[in-house]
Image 1: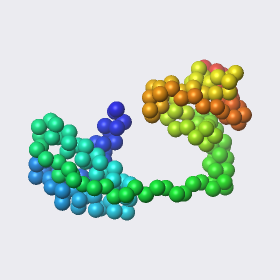
Image 2: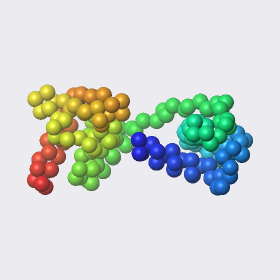
Image 3: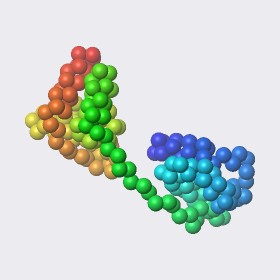
Image 4: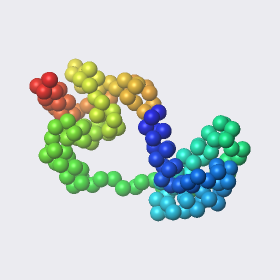
Length: 172
């Protein structure tokens, strides 16, 4: 996907600036030294290592390289996030979204109410909403796993969706 390609390129250029070095001359030690600079951000370090490993595997498949310097690289353990927003923080975000208003404010509030991904809610169309069943059905093209996804929505979400639909109709 274009977004994935952009993210890989950004990460590789930012974290592994080897300049005009010959690809075959880059060693595991070179990569490790670059990754060591990210020691305060283990998640970033793991992502960068995975992207580099994928890049080197691609270079091998294209005949540009014979071995992957990260072939036996072991990732650090992923640290699970333990922090969740407090009720006061949620109220603050909800209020700020309400003050901002418009489509963006509604998107933030719907994310909070439904727990759906940002891109899924931002791409929500009136045709995905079933007023009779009080559900939203996202087509597979929008979901991460590419499967259709139907979820129920509560009264507050219905109010936000119908309000946004009405506002969109007024604006068009």
